[in-house]
Length: 265
Ligand SMILES: Nc1ncnc2c1ncn2[C@@H]1O[C@H](COP(=O)(O)OP(=O)(O)O)[C@@H](O)[C@H]1O
Ligand SMILES: Cc1ncc(COP(=O)(O)O)c(C=O)c1O
Image (cartoon, rainbow, N blue to C red):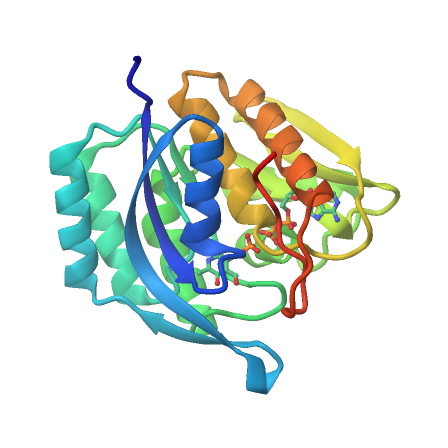
């Protein structure tokens, strides 16, 4: 039996299972990759308060210890970073990445979760941009995150998404995939990749008009899975887009305000 490649995940728990590390590990498993995860924070939605996010960061030293165990055990072929949500967490992740010199770092800069900020906004946005963004091989902001990170106030057209991707790359990420998602004008959910030399569009028909929980996590994890399997970036993004679209087609409805991606068959 051949050994699967390993992806090192740093992400938060979203206890209902729709997003966060739960969606990451399901995605990796589905795509033949062994996921090892360091928990960065815990999100417990509050069903008595419109499912608002209750956010608790994991102590920075505990994050370092988790990473130490994972990196002593495995040689990851890629890294997927999700919600960090606190400045000490961001600094710990910066240190882990700088010391370990890991390949294929995919950073989903989770600043806004379906309309809600995980932590105390501005200092976190700035810290993420300054400390971790320059270490990323691929960054996957959604429309709102791309507006925050690029400083472009309102991204309306597909050309705007490309412009934002280029601007964000100036902060140091090697490639930036701006997700238009349901906010793309027209019938298609379009994401635009700036790979450092050209802009490439990835487009699929929209499935409904609503956001789907776990879509961003599944997309970024699927990209990290493709890279871990040795795919080039364009192929990894193309396959990930296909994977997440199929997962949205099979989305599950629950009591939470958004349907959730189902990564299984
Ligand atoms: N309703 C939808 N139909 C088809 N694709 C979608 C839909 N919603 C999101 N996507 C796609 O899912 C992926 C995740 O995007 P998005 O939901 O915008 O990210 P995030 O979860 O970070 O907000 C992107 O490829 C996006 O284009
Ligand atoms: C821990 C955690 N990570 C990531 C996300 C982002 O999820 P999505 O893939 O839906 O953008 C959320 C959203 O609730 C979350 O709670």
